Image 1 (cartoon, one colour):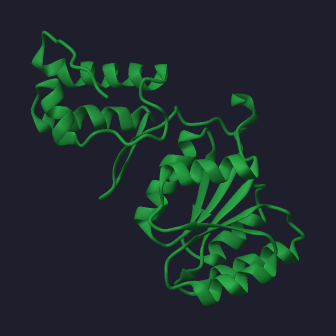
Image 2 (cartoon, helix red, strand yellow):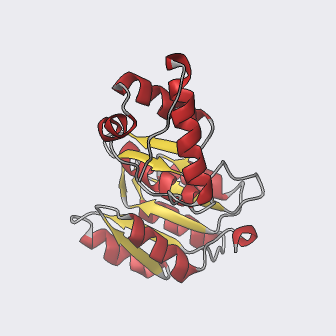
Length: 208
């Protein structure tokens, strides 16, 4: 996926690597939302130390071109969308799920607003308009059902995507009483999320 780049100055090697990766992301050689090879593997491909490679990844993250998800890897993403880009609400208390879904959704040119509890999510619904809601069911201090009820009370027609685990069957049945629901089973897969976005018609119209 990555190609080796030649540099003359060791001090600027990480900058050259970051520039090379940036070109690949912006040209589509590396697709937005794709997982990059491990940092150990990229360090070998570029012929540099792991420290140098990490510095390149950190620089790309500062540029908004990659997102590192702890324990899951590093994901390519488009430059941060403008404030006018469509917003998606992500309500989940699991940092790894939030990191992974955020990387995927931002890779589809969507702006992600996240909340760690149902109450936080409900508060965000009152202040912004979202194209879709990605919702965990089991969270501390309440469940996703509380947010679904708030969606109903506000008369919103926002598509809801439940991100569920194996033990959520009873809550899923209850959730189905609150309108059309789309399910994504954990572990989350990039292709699965993209298919859901396509089916629901959730996209940045400026990119269509």
